[in-house]
Amino acid sequence: MFLSEFLISTFIFVYVSFDSHDWATVVTAALNKYPNPVSPSVIGCDVVDRTLQPSGVIQSHRLLLANWGIAPALNKIFNMSELGYASEHSTIDARRRVMTARTRNLTLNRFINIEERLEYTQHPTDSTKTLLKQEATINVENVPLTSYVETLVAKTLNTNATKGRLAMEWVIKRMRTVPTADATENLAL
Image (cartoon, rainbow, N blue to C red):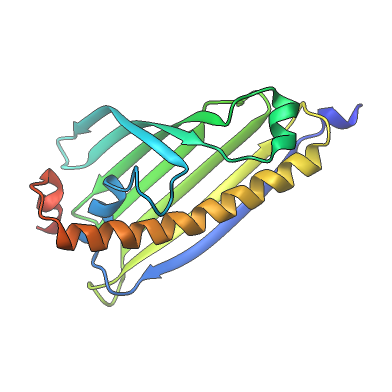
């Protein structure tokens, strides 16, 4: 077996609290997060499908265009531009106060598979707070220097996750200062 045939899997887990933001505010921000200047890696976001189930659950599918910002060495290994696509499927259950979003890369998925899962829940004892559980799984295969590639991807993902949480704060601040008419206002009910 050659080194390039090994499969590496990394799991990243983060648990965060948005201490001064209720669930409806955080979920509205999550839906309006891209693009933003704090986390500029995602440069485009299109809704492919959005449905309201009879149970009141909203299901969405979005396509994201991102500047991966990966190391120049990886660009040479994969012979790619830095732009890539990802698919995000989300579910919002306003009655249970739970939003989940699962995002998978579409670009380079023959070599790198990244799956990120976010879960926003209302804090169990304080409705003015929201909890975020963030998980990511990275699988790298069929490339030379698999461990090196996996490490670079994990570092990039960690950096982007931190920027993503800061971007949420930026979006929430903007929501409070720039009035908009948004269908997600019903989430506060």
